[in-house]
Image (cartoon, rainbow over all chains, first blue to last red; front, top):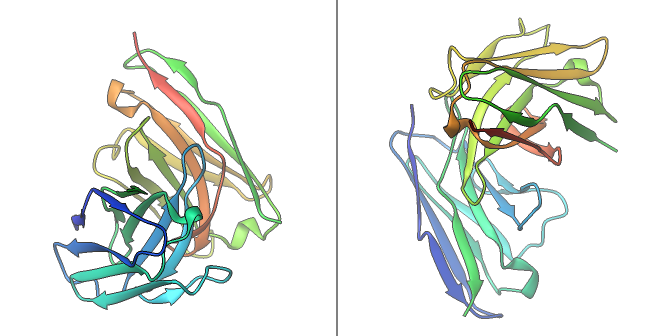
Length: 107
Length: 119
């Protein structure tokens, strides 16, 4: 199975900051990676698919990049609504796997 | 509007069985790949398994921790997805989410149902 390592596991930042979360895969994913946001008590929400494609309705301050084994999610200017936990997911091969998550909290 | 409503969660003893259901509406269920994802309380997301459409042979794939114990099935006439869970272990305790999307990218999720495996 493909392993996906996500880091950092926690990230403290302030409103207006630019933040980047990274995922590293144990094998080549090409661009088959998605990013999700989850808030406490809620189901996850799709942000990015195929590494860099912004899901409809997601603000443009979110962006994804990378290919192969190294990927990143960047939030260009943090807003209060962005404090949440973020997960990457590889879907190059089955079983699909999620990263361990990055909790983004207020500094 | 897409709606996915899970049911069937509850408390079960180790070694027991449980069947979860997911009632789907608001989209063409028979054309959708369906996925189960779970999340232990306070922990991260874990992909459980997926079933393809009848046209794609209803092919299933499972995560290693549940392979051989869990079975995903679907009833397209009832727009319902199932997760049969046998030989349950304490580590199977989690919220179980029914989900769907564009093949393996999940853009719709249910609210989840809690399964607790404890003696």
